[in-house]
Image 1: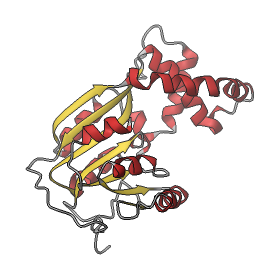
Image 2: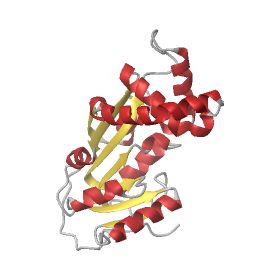
Image 3: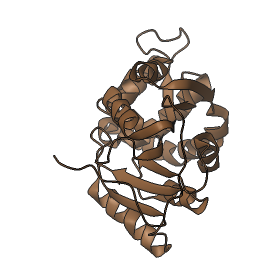
Image 4: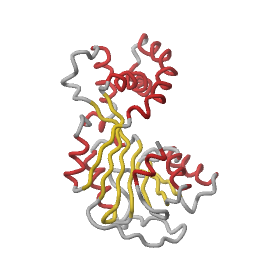
Length: 252
């Protein structure tokens, strides 16, 4: 998926991009090795610190920097980035429209945005063949993923249009991730049975999401999609000095 993300960003070497929800930095480092400058943020301090340690271990301090940050309130100057992306993190946003607004703000005119995320059929109108236990589990998973709860098919595209993004495209990559999802399913199935017997699904929501998410994906209820778009205008690429970094937002 990292290579697909890189191609979807469609930016020249030396471009500055934001990893909005960088985790421990693996995706950011992958893109940096391909020539991009990456600023990573993560709301979890331990993740951000771990990501920065990974950056230092690989000697990539001149290409990648990770810090604690909230994609609802980005700590960067307006029009300071060539690209923004998420990799399965927008589904956790409490206010996806706020994240989109902030992403639009920090992008330069013509800047590119890419989302690798999930969407789904409307759970209030389940298909007739949807097992009640699966529907109950998916609703429970959604209740712990605020953004995903909103992302019925087409909703995220509409949010992007409302924020002013143009040239929006959507591609279904569900078949590409099915083998990995199946692996998660096989690894998690027995632990999940024990969790269900003990009635602890809400405490182990990631395990439930892995098992039931694969079932939903296999039945076509969930999809794994990539959305691409750009901010209106023409992106003018300037030569960037190594280590120059991304301008932090001043004030506040």
